[in-house]
Amino acid sequence: MIAPPNPRFAERVRDSFGRQAAMRLIGATLTEVEPGAVMIDLPVREDLTQQHRYVHGGIVGMIADSAGGYAAFTLMPAEASVLTVEYKINMLAPATGERLVARGTVVKSGRTLAVARAEVFGVAAGRQTLVASMQQTLMVMHGMADHADAARL
Image (tube, rainbow, N blue to C red):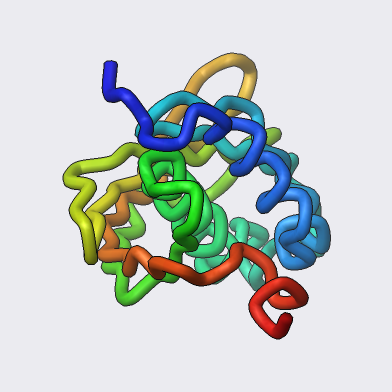
C-alpha cells in the first residue's frame, strides 16, 4: 500500500468531492477512498442519456476524470491541490445499466505531475461491463488551496 503524505487524505478528498457542484448535478457519489485509488458511483437516469439512450460520453468522461483526479489527490501533500492537464478516454461499449462505476488509480505520483487511469463500468443485474478506459495527467498545484474561496484569501 502507498503511504500518502497527508494522513487526513480521505477526509480531504471527501470534503473536496462534496464541493463539486457538477458531481451533485449528475447524482454521482464517492463510495471508496484509499491511498492512490477512489471509486465513484453514478445511478443511470434518463436525463443523463443521449439520443440512443446510452449515458452520454461527456458524463462518462466526467466521472472518469473525477475518479482519476481524486485518486491522484489522495497522494498529494496537504498544501497542494490538483488540476487535470489532459486526458484520453476510449469508449469501449455503450454506457448502460442500472449504474456506472468509475474506479480511479494512480499510475505515477510525482512532485509536479501525476498520471492516473480510470475504468468505467456499467452495472446491470450484478454484472459489470467495461464501458470506458481513461488515462490522464494532473498537475500538483503546490501552495494552492483546494477551494476557490480559500484561494482568493
